[in-house]
Image 1: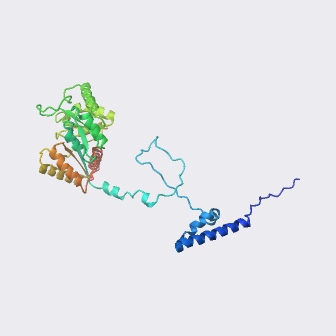
Image 2: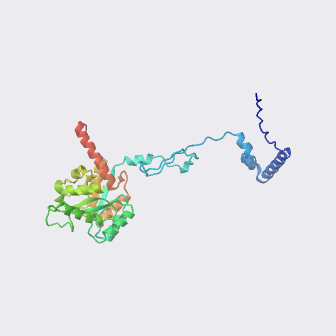
Image 3: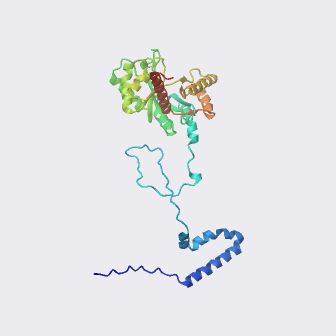
Length: 347
């Protein structure tokens, strides 16, 4: 049999008494010097001084602080297959109170305010007036005619300043004397020609996310004529905002049937171009927003409209201004809610 040898633990090194004595003398010398220079206020720093001179002993004398786990999130990153994933928790100090994001109370309150979306269309014809429209708050959306020479440049400026950009697509009017402009969509055109004209218009407006009709009181009443337009927009994943130049417009039902986001405007701001008339239409817009939660208006880059609208935006209270894409989404939800209520018998 083999005898088991006892396990010998290595002896811990003993601190030389002369070293401890030297540390003690240095400590009292530094303390005396600090008190002599700083008076009683120097005593408040004793804990930190002890930690500095004797870090090893200080670490053994107190409990280790519990680590705080801070959840880090990347803003505005859609969750999906390609979203970044954190495999392990990250141990870090919590942010100080002044660096922590504010509680989302203000944002939640703002979301409960009635929403208003405003589109300025007929853009592209007058650079000076268009730039006044671009100077409006970025939630105001801008719709550009495709044929003016300045349209591509001005659309880029509007996009750069944060506005949503729309193609103001010319379409046939009921009144045959009204000219919607070159490359307009008209009844009787073969589907291939409709798509050709639509593609040309879209190519002229950089940064677009949707279209709305310029005139079009005749074309937008014809479901068959709207079908190739809706199909093309569905392929491009853009919306169709109905300017609603006729009460018989079929834009919204046809577009939604093809999965294209769509809604119609509620108020024209400047059919009558006086300050009182525009202000009255803005008051009507506010009333509709209070009643339904969302209202959408169309205006034009007329000097009177821009004057009144600039003042109105600067003094807007009790409402929130949203881009047209948000307005369409909200109106769609409102319409779907009304449909479901009618089906279930609830009001």
